[in-house]
Each structure stands twice: as C-alpha cells, then as structure tokens.
Length: 70
Image (tube, rainbow, N blue to C red; front, side):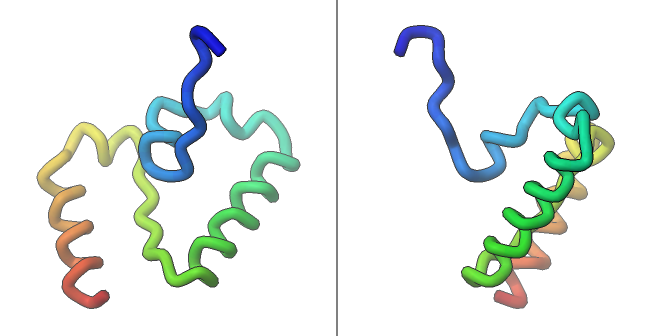
C-alpha cells in the first residue's frame, strides 16, 4: 500500500515515537508485554530515550557492554 511504512519489530519501529505513543494505560501494558516476550525469547533490550539519541557515543558504549556479556 503506497505511503505505508513497513512494520519493523525493533529499534527502527520505535524511533521517533514520543509521549504521544503512550496515550493510555492500554499501550503501556502492551509495551510491557512485548518487552517481556522479547526477554523470554532471549533478546537483550536496550531502551533509549530522546536524551540518549543526543549522546550517540554513550549509546554505542551501552550496546558494546551488552554484547560483551551476551
């Protein structure tokens, strides 16, 4: 469908979402459930906020630290 973003299940899917993403408690619960499923499947989850995106070197360090213990 033209103009429609592909649905990515990862960082790219979450990039650019701000406070409007959590407009109600239902979305907060869904995000918590998704997080739990990722952890149960063996994924490492690194949550990033707007401040993190302004400090990319620190993000790289967090990713490296997570990979070092994987």
